[in-house]
Image (cartoon, rainbow, N blue to C red; front, side, top):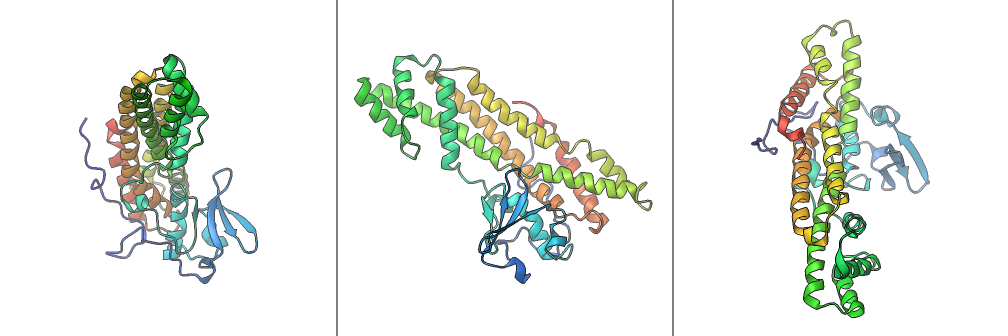
Length: 325
């Protein structure tokens, strides 16, 4: 089904920007002195919360990002406010955010990076367990060697060499198995990487809900068209997150449903379809999710919230984006 180019579709403008100002910027260049300390960093807590870390003093402060500007004495709708609200989206792409760090390229609309080593290892571990059934004698020997090989860039080649030495199977046969499984592992790793880099859907849902509450309970706005629009999108805003979760689960279920090493090429092609959809979903929604994070429910200009509501409705109208593969 035809869909518009996600890079150029319905451009999103962050609330509070000056005319012609580009956002996100290249770096987290906070201006407040207490946000520029070289030992300061933001991290994700065990439950997904944002944690402000002062390494030198070994202090850790858990922050609700919607109210973190108050705790850190940052004026609402200032540039530091918008940078602070970008932190959760950035932490979906990097381990930590420190003052002066570059904003992740994906958040600035650039192509996503390749999967990291831990994604490839996680995908390989899943594949070894899923493909053990019906793998045949040679396939079983290779999977056993792969299981005993330390993770790393050359683990497939090392496992193949070990299998050939210890099992006596021919070079060509084991090499073909290794190449097929490596392609499949890399394809599934790209699915895991695309899912790990998903936009901050939960943060967007939370901000839409908070803004809706403020507008609906404000006597001056409760019957306004904007309040009506917020009521319209509030029950629908979880759709991209739910579709992303369904795609990720379907990609994993395809491997767990069975298959053999001989199916590696077919399975890799199918995993590529899931990867492409997840990346496409991320491109459509990442900038918009980050823009919603920049909203202050009580202070952001209502016209800018109205534009964000329209952005949401246009993306939700792309029905094929949320359908199963």
